[in-house]
Image 1 (cartoon, rainbow, N blue to C red):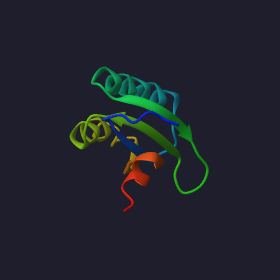
Image 2 (image 1 turned 180 degrees about the vertical axis):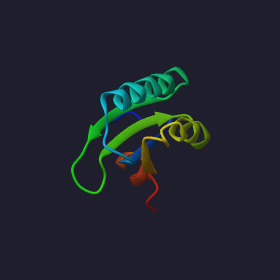
Image 3 (image 1 turned 120 degrees about the vertical axis):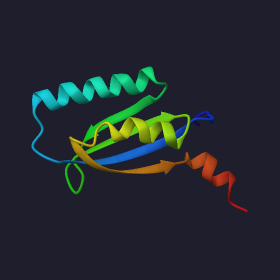
Length: 95
C-alpha cells in the first residue's frame, strides 16, 4: 500500500499544438527540470495514443504551484489538469 503524503497529485492530459520536434522536446525537458527545482515531483510521463498525446503525473504542494509550472507549457500543448487522491485516501472519505 502506498504511503500517504501531504503533497497533492496532479494528472495533466496534453495535446500537441503542432507536431513535436526535437527542439520542443528539449525545451519541455528544461521546463520539467525547472518544475523539480521548484519543488514538484514528476511521478510519470507518458506519450499516448487517442484523444490526448501525453499524460504527466506530478506531485506538488498546491494548485498555485502546479498552475505556475503548467502555464509555461502553453506554447507547446493545450492541457487539462485533474487533481487526484490515492485510492486509499478516497476510501477514507466514504461514510
